[in-house]
Image (cartoon, rainbow, N blue to C red; front, top):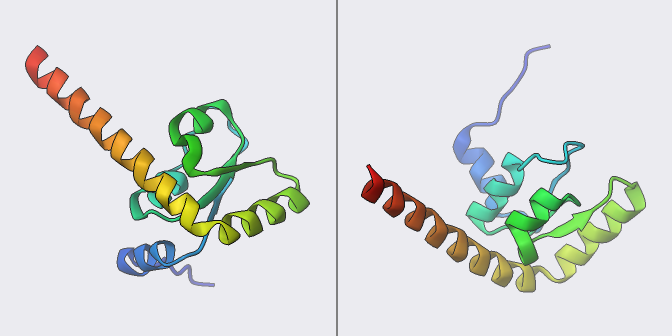
Length: 111
C-alpha cells in the first residue's frame, strides 16, 4: 500500500475551512502543531486539557479529556459556538503576534 500525503495547499484548505479541529496529546508539556496551525488559520479547536495548552491558547480553544463522550460533546459545543471561538482566536492570535514581535525586538536590541 502506497502512502499518500496531503499537499500543503490541500491541507491548508482543509483546516482553514473546517468548523473545528481536534488535536489531542498524552504529553503534558506538548504544544501541538495542530493547535498552532488552527490558530494560524483561525479555526476553532478542541485540544487536550493540559496546563501548557491552556496557558498558550487561553480562551481560543475548548479543552478536553480523552474520553470519547467528552470529546464528542466538546466538538459539538465548539461547532455550535463557532463565531465566538473565531473571535477569541483573533484576540489570542493578535496577542501572540505582539509578544513575538516584542521578543524579536528585544533580541535585536540585545545583540
